[in-house]
Amino acid sequence: MIFPLFNANSFWNYKEACDLAGARYPAAPLGLITVAALLPKNWEVRLVNRNTELLTDDDFAWADMVMTGGMLPQRNDALRIIEMCRASNKPVVVGGPDVTSSPDLYSAANFQVLGEAEEIMIDFITAWRRGDTQGVFKAPMGKTDVTKSPLPRFDLLKLDQYLHVGIQFSRGCPFSCEFCDIIELYGRVPRTKTNAQVLAELDALYALGYRGHVDFVDDNLIGNKKALKKFLPDLKLWQNKKKFPFEFSTEASINLADDTDLLRGLAETNFFAVFIGIESPDTDTLVMTQKKQNTRRSLQESITKIHEAGIFVNAGFIVGFDSEKGSVAAGMVDCIEDTAIPVCMVGLLYALPTTQLTRRLLAEGRLFSGGEQTQSGDQCTAGLNFETNRPRRDVLNDYRTVLAEIYNPVAYFGRVRRMGRMLKRERAHKMIRGDLRSFIRLLFRIHRAGPGTAKQFWRMMLDCGLHNPKAIPYVVMTSALYLHLGPFSRQVVREIDREIKDVDEGRWHAPAVKVAAVQAAELEPAA
Image (cartoon, rainbow, N blue to C red; front, side, top):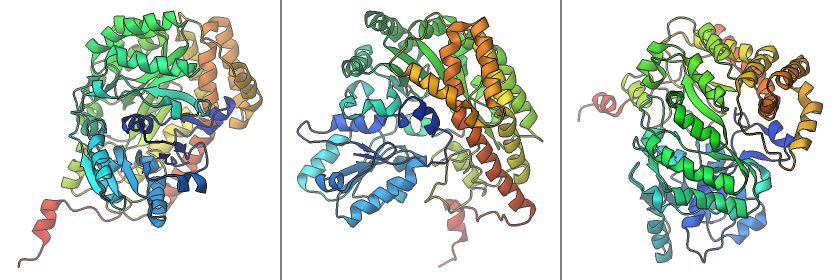
């Protein structure tokens, strides 16, 4: 099993923060180790993560078969692995969200496993044992019974290579955001594992000696609130019994702030961070993109409630929606500052395969063709794959303005300081091996993140020490991320500035647009 490289030019590729902790990559490959658990017990499995280790000739020669695949930012390397396999006459099986969304791009693979693997891997195994040399196995979208999902093969991981390890409680999201492919891949009815399943996964990690950060990788942890509320008391009992070996993070929608009991339950089980897609402070944009759960509320009050529950928020924002009227930079910067969210993934809108947005843009004749094969980065540097409503230059300028302002060290550490004051942690952070070493490394390296950074860091640390010492481990975490986010944001700004210059000097020309199937039929000459 080979986990492909993520593109280096990515918001999520925070190697500097990993290095502080002696890790090699942020997250472990949960998908592949889940697939590994679906294979026959007598099959010998090796896992090679190309983000953390080298794939050797010996590894390659040892294997009878290669399994690979992943997400969009891994496409380049996944295709490279397929080429290596074909050149060596090594059967290769591909799966994962990008393969499922764009199977034609992976046609060179011997086998494709499209969709959720739990109920179709047996079909592949049967075909393999029968001697088949190629095939496509497709699961119906969003129908898999996750209570049948096996215990992932955590034993295949080199656990010390990662900042955190993932587990999953549910799949799917009840909302219908136009730009999101989660509902297309996993459906709008969140399906949950049993409490016993999830606790067994935690038991397995605990037995392997793992301690620290565990990420619930759910598309929206609160998509099925009823099931989650039944799970949290059992999780609290487990944590108490084991003396709280784990701290948890997850992803959820902002309506989490509406449920005080649920927030308390998450805090009591030691959740410390949540990623929330805010996308835009503009109500018209939220309505157009069908993200209505973010409307009819004060974003500032909602985020403050979550912070005051002892859980800090990371957030996603997007520039480039059709509904944007004039410049959106000032409004977005104000929203980020008002909510005191330090880590904000601000990206350019990208029309992902299979989404409602892509279908609409295709029908409107605005989706660019070409460029599907390779991926240069992520939504920070490879967005706007369509004709924008506003002038492209204006969208790009808004984007670079937001990035430049929010990742200025004064602004960033100002938000960390305000978040640190709000964060009411009932439970102190449990020191694990390496925490002190990581902190000392941070002290020696913080100045590398750019001029003025060290001064703002120490000002923030002093404030947190005086006003809320329990929050210190968490403001240190967000400070460590700035070792990546500061330089990365400046790099992206430079790239966007070059794009703006190309537009100004006439070097940028819009690619040809894709023609929808119906339009193509109309354009064909009569027989």
